[in-house]
Image (cartoon, rainbow, N blue to C red; front, side, top):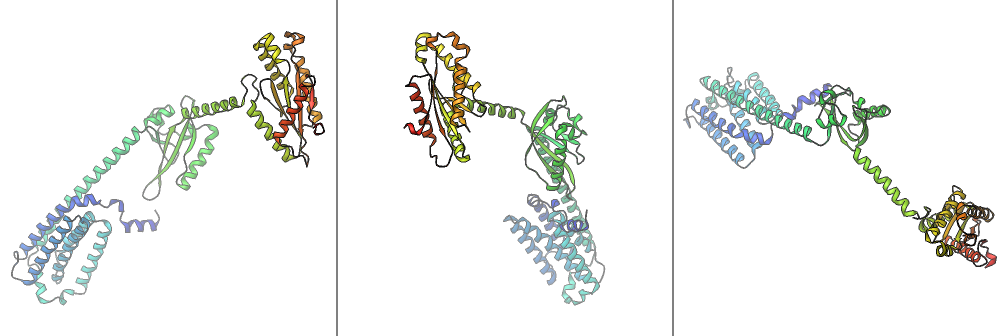
Length: 499
């Protein structure tokens, strides 16, 4: 401990040892009774209650008044003021007797000193220190400078003719101090046992795992939940390094964490992977606090952990479920391609990017010819197969950065980023060719073969092209309409000159 800390501790006299207000209230009534007995004893020693000497009578009246005022303060709940008044009042009375006897050694120095000790128990260490310094200064001045010679002659009547009074009062004060000290000790032990019981109850009965870790990062103690979390007995955990329960790849980070904790004093809640005795892993939510002594030295780390393995599993399951739900919400149930809303969103996003990057994007609408004839002649199951086959052919034909979705019952939309009209036409021609060559076509009579009518529209991305995404969809629809009404099984491209 640094010298400055030692001086500060001495001046403060360990504030944690001061009696509480509740304990002071409990001790005050015995102190008041003791004060009354001491006052009566003093009056008897000084010649009886209200004896003939005026100075003595004045002191006796002052003593009775002091006890009355102190009792009234106590009754009004002002226990601390009453205690100060009782101790300081008797200290002044004994000081006056010492003052009057200063011509010789006085036995009244003993009860005066005992009052200083009593102040430590009834009030606090700072008050006792102040009273002790005042006592030393007053007694030194009285004897060093012969101050009693300045007292009026009648005040010398306070001097006791016999020393037995001082001895008797000292003995009674000593017995009372023993009683007070014993009461304070029992109360302190009771509070310590209560505090220890509460802590032990919290330590053992909490749902969390609690570890006490020594400064060398070995376990000092652990509750049963902590032992169960790591798969050891409590006895096996004591002395084991905390890093034995941390995966090898995370140990260096854990060491840095402890170093930061010692410097900063606290760190936010964090998550850690734990390795159990059988090698399995658990996830825990961890908080660690420093526990220090009164001098600021680290005693141990208190680590509180909560097993969140199941919570993490449920969170991951929920995340996957939400991902699946989001996928399903964007997916066409029959074909597995994007649904109308999703393909529209992607088309608009690609149009915005094309506009921003000044590059082309083409949209193609694909329609199945003769689907109604297939449904009427071969049944709706075959009709569904025809649609699914087209979706499969689309997935095989398009590039990895193209988008495709089911636009309607037998219509599909293709979004072709970075593609001009010539390239778009090549892609959809390849789609038609692959679809016509698919195995499903062999199951269908030639006159019922489904064919594809396709309309293509393109946003050039060049300066001056003001085509909106909505207009682009409309242009592709116009081109598809022309393809279907000019013979079907063909590709039409939207051109402004045609309008």
